[in-house]
Length: 175
Ligand SMILES: C[S@@+](CC[C@H](N)C(=O)[O-])C[C@H]1O[C@@H](n2cnc3c(N)ncnc32)[C@H](O)[C@@H]1O
Image (cartoon, rainbow, N blue to C red; front, side, top):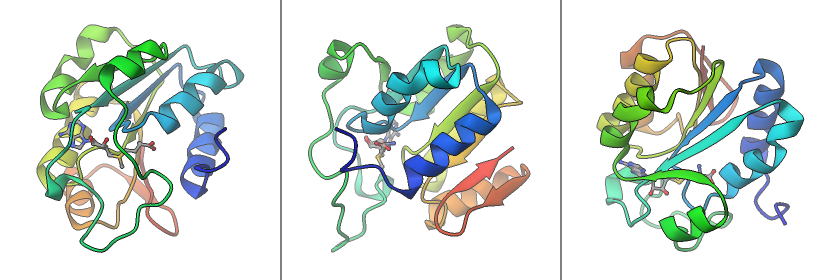
């Protein structure tokens, strides 16, 4: 069922989960919940106790998407899953702008180590806020940033000043 969407992103994500053994997995920007469902299903294998997703669950502004005009988006193409559908699948998800919803992360009592896949809004403001909000609650959290070659995401990573390691293409880990 996941074969059509598994790619280098998920391969690297799973290898990092195997390396860091998080107890909590957070996905900021879970869209159709493909990756969140994958990790939730595999959680027992990786010793992950809780998987949490955050998304607008509605159309986002153009500067928040990784798509430029004329870009193709084959693997994740399609409408976002509705919030109700995600809940119906048994996923722990929170709806709203992550600039606000992530400020309540501290209330969720997440067990460390925390691993956060930050793949939400791609503007500088949103990405910077997502990194800061996760690190504010869990300063030891490992963050995997998608599309780190996009200007807003690249700038957010640089401005945060945390030690980071870039993969050959578009992924960056903040440790
Ligand atoms: C590239 S998709 C995420 C793909 C997903 N991580 C996966 O691997 O299947 C980006 C998602 O970020 C969400 N998003 C954009 N801006 C957001 C914001 N300010 N707050 C919450 N979610 C946001 C969009 O709704 C979209 O679903």
